[in-house]
Image (cartoon, rainbow, N blue to C red; front, side, top):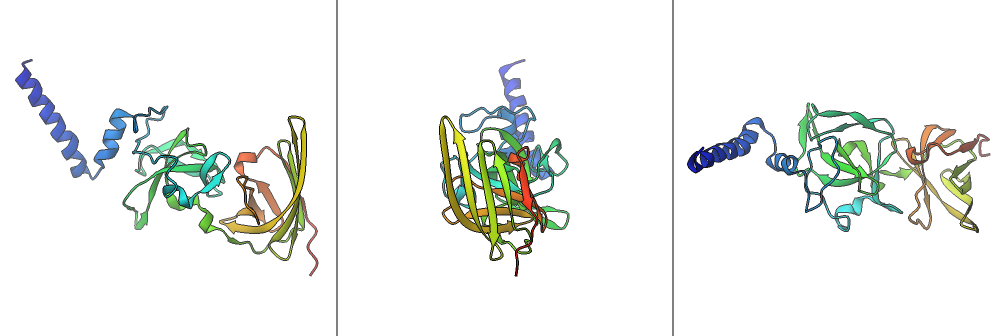
Length: 250
């Protein structure tokens, strides 16, 4: 094949590559990302062949201003029910895996424009693990829960509960509707620590946040199964929680 013919084939390929997405209403940057499978010089492990956008830097405080900032970095929560993951911002490209309810994830990219899904405008986002190191895939932003979504909890009919997370144990007592006091203790590496905290219960889509008055990098979330029953968030679903079912006297 002559150089002239080779250049002609390259020209045809480029025309098809950039023109066909416009005809098929797809997005050229996503196709380019998938072709090269690298972002800003970083190559990610991508076994599901996810369509990768250009991610935000983890130090971009403005981008992550709507996230929680925990001990493992920025995160938001997945809605309580199982959430489908997509290989690309396309409802026909679901993966077999699903996100567990109340899982912590980090948004790495938000698609600039919303898409019509049926008759509804919805917004795609690409998410990773809480640390930002493990790529997950595409979900809709309305399937995620942000700090701004939490409001004062109502209809709580338990007196308190006790829960453990590894070597950390806390006993929580509810009073005055959605306020609480907590006695906690932790041990490890030859140390034994204990203390008292207070705060309020906030709620969003059946997820309860025990927000401390002086909130630190440690966040406590629970799933509200009923007015008298909570369970641990997905991250700690193998740890224990025991409810005190006695109602608070009027």
